[in-house]
Image (cartoon, rainbow, N blue to C red):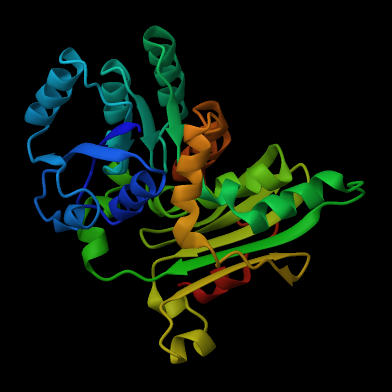
Amino acid sequence: MKRFALIGAAGYIAPRHMGAIRDTGNTLVAAYDPNDSVGIIDSFFPDADFFTEFERFDRHIDKLRRAGGSVDHVSICSPNYLHDSHMRFALRSGADAICEKPLVLEPRNIDELQEIEADTGQRVNTILQLRVHPAIIALRDKVASEAHSSKHEVDLTYITSRGQWYLQSWKGDEKKSGGIATNIGVHFFDMLHFIFGRLQDNRVHLREDTRAAGYLEYEHARVRWFLSLNLGDVPDGPRSNGQRTYRSITVDGEEIEFSGGFTDLHTRSYEEILAGRGFGLEENRVAIETVSHLRTAPINRTGEVHPFVGNTS
């Protein structure tokens, strides 16, 4: 049985990590969050120690290590801009890190973390949940088996409406979240690289606080993408039925269904990590380079533009 600590216990994604720790037969011994609204822990690990001050959490983890009860893994569910420092903490505490997306905000952080991995002998793993989705794996295998006489035409649309709170939270601060393309888009960009190969072109068509769009070209695909947090961008049909989200990926006009099984992908990710098949720092590089470029690249409406871009003002 592996011993886990968790940073960011009060966040939206933390229960998926707690469930994955439980479902893989392991235990959570300590958790930290400056917010004490963490009653969800009782549903998974009611005996876990909990701290609202990082200094006390740090001291506790060190005390466990010195007493021979080290944690094996630190699961990191903190705000994006803290991922880098929390992974450093995990590695220097003698534990492997399991970090939520986005792994870091800038590619240089990957290089620095690789140096700490080498110094400590510990490893960073990341949650790239779409890489373990059966439908995505099947599509990747299909693309890999093709003759590649031409590139696939792909449209990616992801709308997940958020209330006024979003822009007032750390998620609305680009310096902390990386902006919308990083916060809600990075795992889709990783998925596209995973399926279609090396990134060859990256253009920005739209960059706002709550919307972003652009064009990506890979070895085997030309991709138009659109991301939004606005309910008004959900197509009329789904929105009239009360639907607040809309997700669509088409490849050569054919819809790829990958909504099913989304809730258990964290457990599947943990299974792979614990079996030594996790995705490490280098596997994240292309996606992090992609979103880093999107933050600063000039708006360039040349090339293929996603049809939803015309709906924005």
